[in-house]
Amino acid sequence: MVTGEIAQKMQNAFVGNAITEPRRRLLLVAYSFPPVGGAGVQRPVKWVKNLGQFGWNVTVLTPENPSVPTRDDSLFPDIPEDVLIVRARTWEPDYQSKQAMLDKIGAAREGLLNRAKAGAKKLVRHAAKLALQPDPQILWVPSAIRAARKVLSEMQHDAILVTAPAYSSFFIGTSLKRQFKLPLVMDFRDEWDLSGRYLENAQRDNFSRMVQARMQRYVLRRADAVVATTHASTANLAEKLSRLNRSNIKAVTVFNGFDAGDFSRDKLESAMLSADNMPTPTHFRLLYTGTLWNLTTIEPLVAAILQLEKTVPELVATLELVCVGRKTPEQIAILERLRNFGCRLKLIDYCTHAEVLGWLQSANALCLLLSDVPGAERVVPAKLFEYLAIRRDILAIMPKGEAADIVKRFFPAGHCAPNDIDAIASWLKNRLSGEISANAEQIASGDIDEFNRVSQTGRLAGLLNEVTQQHTSQSAHQSAST
Image (tube, rainbow, N blue to C red; front, side, top):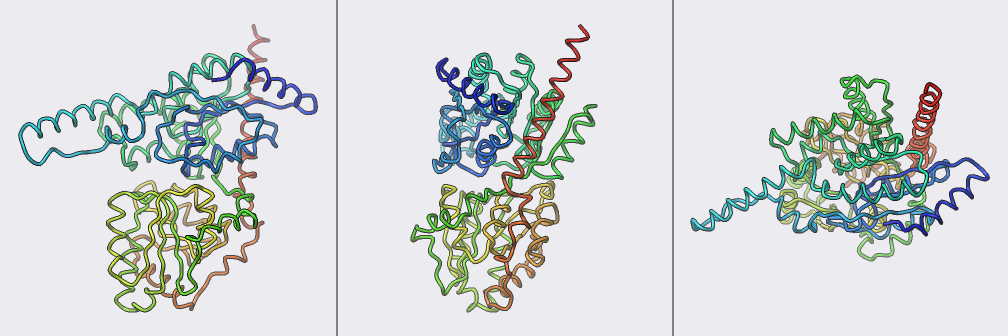
C-alpha cells in the first residue's frame, strides 16, 4: 500500500519535473511484474524502464503475494528509482495449491470410497473453476481496486494502462475509469480467445466460453484504446471493436521487442560466466528457450532428428539440443525419445532472464516453435526479437504467419512448416555438416531497430498522449457546454 508520506514524495517529484517540461503520470496495472518471472513480465518492465524518456512517470499496481510458479529478481535493476510501486494483496491460494485445485485428476483406481472421494474432489474443483471467471486472479481484483483508489485520490494521474493476462485485471481498469474519469488503454499481451483455447488450465466448457465472451465485449466497450503484440492480433481486436460499433477506438500494435542494453558486451560476458553455459567445440548447440507445451510442441524437431539418425548418425552425434524453460509432461516424453540415440540432450528448468541471455550467447543456432493450430498465424513469440538481437542462426518451425514473415526477412532459409520433417532434417544436416551457415552476426543494428524496446515504448507513449489529449478536449467541451 502507499503511505501518505510516499505519495507526497512522489507528488513533489512530479511537480519538480513539471517545472522544466510538462509530464504526465500513468497507472500501469500489471499482475506480472517483478519479482514474478516469465516472458510476460518483460513487457511491462521495459515500458516502465523507458516511458520516462517520453514524458511519462509511472505508478505500477501489482500483487503483493502473486500466485505464480517462477521468480526473477534479475529484472529489478531495470525499474527506475522514481517508479512508484503499489502492491495489493491477492486472496488467491499459493501456486501449488492453485494447481492442485485446477489439475485434472482421474478417479482413484481402486475402492468405491476412494472413487467417491475423487469424484467429490473433482466436482469441487470444477465448481471452483466455474466460479473464478475469467481466471483465478479475479481474487486479486477487490484489493487492487481499493489500493488504486487510494493512490489515485492522493496523486494526479492522467491515464490507466492495463496489461493482460490476467484478463480479470481489465475489470480493475474499468472500475477505476468509471470512478476517476481517466482514459483507459487495454494491452492484450495474448489474445483472450487464443488463451482460452490453448492454455493448459483454460476453462473450455461452453458455459465458460459464453461468460468470457461477454466479459471481453464488456471491457472492450469501455476501452479508450487497445494494444496488441502483432499486426494480425491488432486487426482481430479492431474487428471486435467494429462489431461493437466502436470503430472509432484506436487499435495499435506494440511489439514486445528487445532491449539493446541486455545485449551489451559487458552484460553478455557476465551472463556467460556460468560454466554450464560454455559450449563444447565438438558439438553444434541448438537452443530453445521458453515453455514447451501444446502451442509450442517440439515433436517436429524430434521427428527430424530421429529421421536424420537413420541416415547420418555421425552428424546427429555432433548435435547438442538444449531446452531451457518449463516443459509439460507430454513434451518431456517427446524429448526423452532422443535419449537412446547419439544426440546430446540437455534439459534446463526455468532460468532468470539474465541466465537466459548467457544461454543465448552460447548457442550456435536458436529454435523457434509454433504449433500448426488455428490462430497461431497471429502469434509472434516474444523471444523472436531477442533471437534477432543476439545475432544467431534461427530455425523457425511454425506455420505461415506474422512470425514466419519476420524470420524470413532475416533468415530466408530458416523457416520450416511443422509438418515438413524433411525440410527440418535438411536444415539440420546442412548446419551440422558445415555445408551451409547463416551470417547472422552480419545483421546490422539498423536492420532490427524497429523492434528495439525504446522504439516500441515510443509507440505506446504516442498512443497514451493521443488518448489523454482526446480525453482533455472532450472534458473541456463538456464543461463548456454545461
